[in-house]
Image (tube, rainbow, N blue to C red; front, side, top):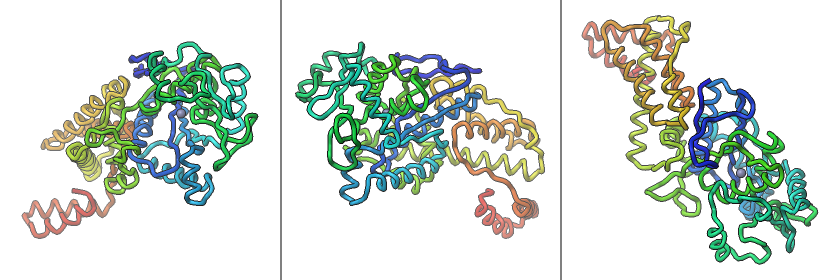
Length: 445
Ligand SMILES: [Zn+2]
């Protein structure tokens, strides 16, 4: 099996991936807080880690992929109150919307999409254990995690003692022993609440993923993913709790994707420069949006611009046209290409195995389109070459999860193509123009 190299945020370097269990990969990606329509920035981790998942599947791994829905949160509670509906009604609606978008983007269904509210008993007993082992303390109605109780807090994000001191000036909270201690349980009577040993309330954000991971997978997983913005404090605090409970770092590999920039500014709800994912997809189509989210190294910022979108559209059209041309040629000439399953995409896969080097992988893909087009232009076409590179191209777009149209000619299409060729051979341009229109309509030209 080929080595997969990933950039591990924990060590800050590229490492050869070694699974905990042979030929198995466990991946957890922090999912959305479901209180509004997702913007395309929210879709980037889903698409990036879907590519990683597809790569592992191609290599023959059994992949368990879990991504949660945060369905308890102040923003959810406030919006439910505002709309006079229950939190569940609100989150059910936005979960459905999110899943529709994932389907449009051809993101494989997760092995499991746990919801926080389904794990409340586990979350409460997890926090209770942290209190009992002195890793957490109860002060004025709230429970806080005690970061001084574990060694090397900050190893993922590299926050230093200086940062901690600087932070103390900004975030003054007299109940906390240390300014970076974080809330595990919050007393509240606003919106949905649960009974706990510390009174009615709800959990803080940082405990849910650790609990769901330990319930679904156990103490340690292979890969934990999410956006760069989750590195601190969310992922740092997940690690802190896991160290306190199980003395592990929760995941062997931590992977983070970059943001999306619009006009050189990070796309974020707080800046108000977000592009609604649903609108963007209905305008450009799922294939285009997935292509755009993939066609940039996952750790780099994706700088959206009109030029970039135009370039992507040209590339997509080029791939689609090549795929159509070769398939039409093979099918029209009744060539049995289906019984030949050979393909060779080693170089393409090697690039993806190198921390998802998408630009080199795409060069390999365009090399395939070039070979196919060159062969199609020849008078004496080498059928074996066409079949092999057709298969390569199909495999590549499959690994990338790009849902191009796959033409299958019907008898009527073949008749039309024959009539078109005949009209052209007879220089009957009125007729050939007429058929041409129909061929365009049927996307055969
Ligand atoms: Zn999380």
